[in-house]
Image 1 (cartoon, rainbow, N blue to C red):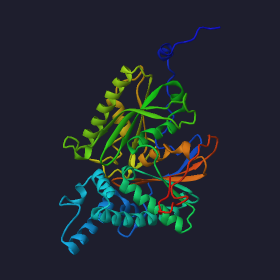
Image 2: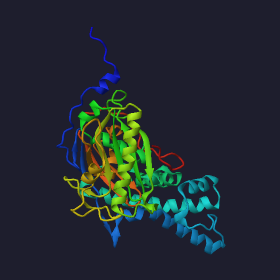
Image 3: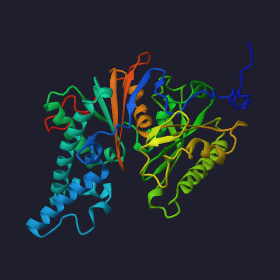
Image 4: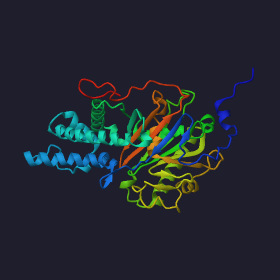
Length: 385
């Protein structure tokens, strides 16, 4: 019987080079096809998604605050401007079930009607035909206020006999945009290394982390973990007003994670998956949709993948490869192991803007149970996810 090879010895064995034919923004992966993403559906003078952005909810809440002040002369939410009230504060007020909660609930009702309307508009688009489940991601859904609004929108769609069900992202939104990369990264990477690096660039925050596929725990990639999560609020950082500042800040965060992986004795792949807003071209350039980031990210003279590669060191003796995809696509793919009960599904991510993507499952994966939100509304009218 041959002697057992220790894990440490295995880690020190030579690693194969990663395939260099993996294009940026690819639409076909094993088991799933990305039908489309970053749709810009027009609505009057703007876009449909503008009515359900994080800013839109603040505007709805502001309207109800002004109305209450006009009637009673008081504002249960205090004197702080609506845009400066945190989600945590709104959740606390909602739990107290007082006058402030009534105002917040009224704004959530308005938002729910808008969200149901937006869902119907997307379902009418060719790339969304046949969609039966929609995952709502982004930071808004992680709050009690957001959950209330999404549950109500699910009920409205159910009452219309809609065959679509709304679900909230099961992962924390800070991690979903990283975890989804396990379905976009080269399969050789997942099999040969313990972990890889991933980045999620948003209009307000950047998140970086070490992604551990944990195939030995769950071959269907339903038990992925993120280590060393770092979050940077670049939108409020006076040192990140230029595109170059943001890219360098991301590179510095990744270097810290590389050192952390080494301290943890993790076999780290020479690969970084970057999720960012906009339409991603095969060469790694961004053609549209990155207007919320500082500077011009859509010029042909800028290539984020190339620029970031030049700032990163080698990993395990190999030059680091960077691959890009749309942030909504990646966040949605974090749900893939739990979406095997349907053929067509989609994602909407509520943040600075509204991200979107739709998918078709091609089969061949295990089918964990997933109970969609809004499928059987409770007596209180709130669907269960």
